[in-house]
Image (tube, rainbow, N blue to C red; front, side, top):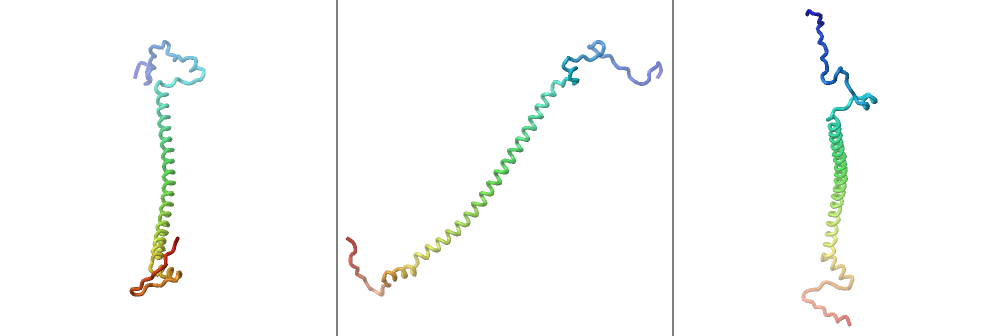
Length: 130
């Protein structure tokens, strides 16, 4: 590789800036930071919006799950109550059926001094009332 080259490229001169020094405005120099690229702020806002949307949907999902669980618990309680009421209804139907049975009527009539009629027997009762 003759003519004094060591294999490294020589740096290219910067075009449009004069001596090659990078000019910065006074705000950049005082903080020591570089200016962000123009699309960086937009990307940061987009990412923040997406993260907020994901977190918001997560909160909504958790609330709906909690509401669903409480609804399921109340449905289970109502099903148990329905079963108890069905049992109670069947017991009441048996009781009502026993109240209208012939034996019950005969017992109640005997308390009033009545007896079952024999063959063609007719009872004449005096009129009661005003």
